Length: 194
Image (cartoon, rainbow, N blue to C red):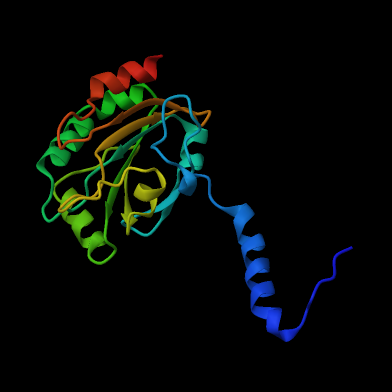
């Protein structure tokens, strides 16, 4: 058996090694991703807060029904008009989404300072139908974990839409690498019917 030198001189090395061994095995799988989640993969779980402070957990929602996850651009220096249009179209299609037994979870990412205020501005004048929730993603924790961060000047997240089934797997994924080319209610309903 090798001799272990436990002198005080070696204490910093021993402590650092033990700390690494303690932390390394529990790394979050979403943080280790190299690309966004794709169709047929398990959706990495997350918890984010609504504007009223209540926590929403993806895995809890999918126990009840499929979830349509809309990742918005947040506030890249202005309220994105294409996000506003897309959310308006989903609100207009709320009854069809409810008939398909789907819940809609919208993620509003951005820097934590003023994020709550900007998200409140975004939904001003909109009434979220039953089954719709808006959550905020302070400092891009979710966005980074799901590899959706659009890390460029005046950008936040790639506008993305996912449909996650009750089994927790992704049935539909569309990631827009531009401001446009967003998913629409029709293609989401087609995905939910499969």
